[in-house]
Length: 130
Image 1 (tube, rainbow, N blue to C red):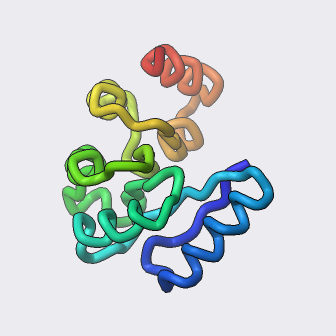
Image 2 (tube, one colour):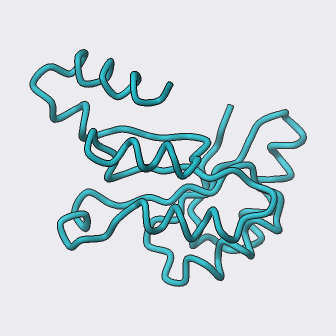
Image 3 (cartoon, rainbow, N blue to C red):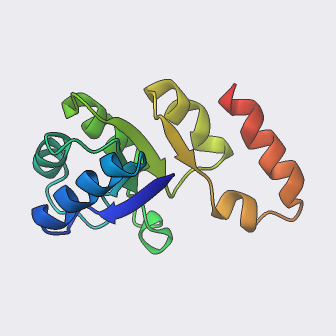
């Protein structure tokens, strides 16, 4: 029900996706991975009528100190229409703060996939979402 488009895409691409989503009753999520001016681009994309704007911290840059919560706060501060979402860097030590910040969608990958007990890790994450 949700199609993801990169935030670095041309405006025409994003607008075309929004138009198609409305026609077929779907939703559009914009993935902001590697967007250089997050605040400015978020404002532009929010005005295009997308449903979600997703901050996405790539696994290989998380060790550099890039924090998805900081980016989520920027997005939440400037959006007026879309909901925020988060992918990358979501783990037990960060999920409560992400939930408190109010992300509409939280994508958990490595914290589950890299866990020794994946089912238990997923259940524990889910408990933090309630």
